[in-house]
Image (tube, rainbow, N blue to C red):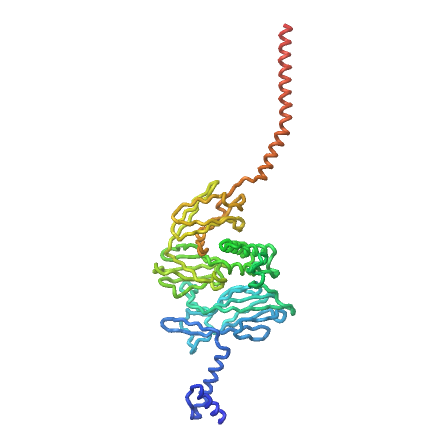
Length: 478
């Protein structure tokens, strides 16, 4: 008991009130121990949200478990796939004062996105009303991988959709995966001494990977070597369009999609005051809830790199709707604004053998026009005005080949796809090689046909003369 009293006296230096009654010693000690244990491995961050005038706060911690060992709060891990082919992630939501929200429509959890192509599943969301949320990942090969974790709180709507109420600062977990004692290959691109070498661009991933073909790597490197910014963005977009349908887990696709802006379609009016958007090249889109004024919204992933955004009850025609993609590299992770009440229209009015015709109404120029063939950009045009009908000559596309080309029109920041017309522009050009072959063929045909025709004509004239002579001889005999 003397030792307990001495321990409590030492608490006086911490500003705690002195305790003289030994009957009060035990509750204070228990309280102190509970406080110390509950804050062991202090929270990495806190999420706060206000519901019906009451503010809830939850401290967020995480633990990674591999091969029977726990690693709380760490962001860098070295794991051996030979010992254990899985890793487990536990994210803890410790609500302060145990004030778990009574609203049963509220759930919390996290969204994760995988980088590196070595973990599965690659992306998903975990939602629950539990303080502990688990996710197991399979290790597919040795290398470097990353997980971007975004803690969130959702509310379930009447349409059984989940809308984000608030979110915490995302954190990234990095994994160096070895196998059979072999070191991991470097699959994550980064700046090094090769930055100024055009044969090894900064964003190129040089390490071999079984998930990457030589053709895919060459296409990625070609896009990364583009110097002009708009050309590079479009080249990366085309790379994602070409390879993501069949290889969404490719590390090159994951790197390319982080280096293009988040693109939104024009609003599709669903009736009344409901609008639908398609978000393209999306990794981890997040709504700025402070800018949501006058409407409700739902955001859901529909496919790799594609989300559907639904806006309802548009009662605000002043404020824009801010959205950012936290999974992209700078500067493409900056927030952008969507204004459902802004009107812009771009239409393809037709084409002829010399040009194709685009009509622009509204919006803020310049607009960027691309012609592509086989998902490879062939030509780029800048339109510096709106409210006009623009004729774009086909002859200016020096790289265009004969055949159909896909037309795409973007705003100046690639944030909005204003028009997509698949194989709508047709280019027919004289191929000098083929023209030469045709000319040679014609000459040969004429040459080989000329002699028989000439001989036939001489024969005809000769026989005609014979007939005339016979007629004269008959007349003379009479």
